[in-house]
Amino acid sequence: MQLVQSDEGLTVELYTQMATIRRVEETLQALFRQGRMRGTTHVSIGQEACAAGVVGALDRQRDFVFSTHRCHGHFLAWGGEPRALFAELFGRETGICGGLGGSQHLCWSGFFSNGIQAGMAPVAVGMALSRKAAGEGIGAAFLGDGTFGEGTLYESMNLAALWGAPLLFVVEDNGYAQSTPRRVQHAGRLSARPAAFGIETVVQDARDPVALRRLAEALILAVRSDCRPRCLYLHTYRLAAHSRSEDYRDPEEVQARRQRDPLPALRRRLPEDQADAIDREIARRVAEAVAAAESDPPAQPRGVPLPAATLPLAPLLPTGGERA
Image (cartoon, rainbow, N blue to C red; front, side, top):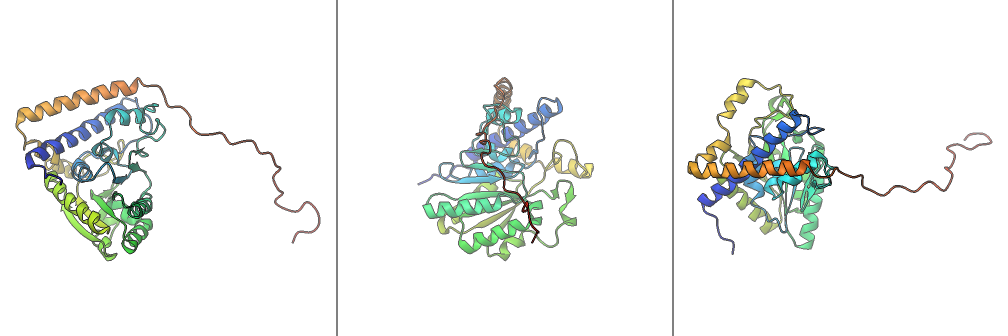
């Protein structure tokens, strides 16, 4: 029988996870600005409660998580190590995918992410059905509000409901797809769309991570009990730019939302000396992870070379006579 964690213990756990995600992603931003990392990255600063609140309610031994291009927080909440994440983005052999996947394409111990909008939804449904057939575990698939512009998502929800996939769809609605406001690209209520397929949907503001964890635990228990999909629709806000720099949102809006940042609000629930100690330990771990990852050996090419062709290619057209 699983014991219910006290609110005090849960607050410490969630603050530690959220503060770790924040510190890692702020460090990533600094490393990119310094030119020490190549490519691009998408951070979830401001949205950490979604990752910590939901992912921690899953069973890492038997469940799985599918994520999006904004995946670092989900990976860290799943138990991934900061050093492996930094090494991946540095392009090091010790990275999650040997330094070849980069920021968006992570694959590790039941965790999978990809940058294609809705591209992981049908894969998540398929894996959930596979786990159901084997009688082992369920899954969670994270989505953004912009993903509701992709037909693949609706096909996936339809099959999940029709065939009974044990999957929790988790929507992180931060109000924007890149810098395009939701109100100018989607008609109606997005939270009503999963329900159209018969998927029970619960809408929640993600500002209180403790309440979110309790809700996620209840929904995951329901999915586990009847092997039917559910949807947890979260209202959140991204405080950083979509990617490395571009941000066309109203600066006054962003600044106003900073005043409602869930991380410092959760910190205030802890004794100050305890919160300070947690922050110091996170800063130490992240700094050590960066130093170790940056000094690791670079990634090596993978794969087996294709053999040289041994047969001549067939001509596209006959070499003689009239063409049909």
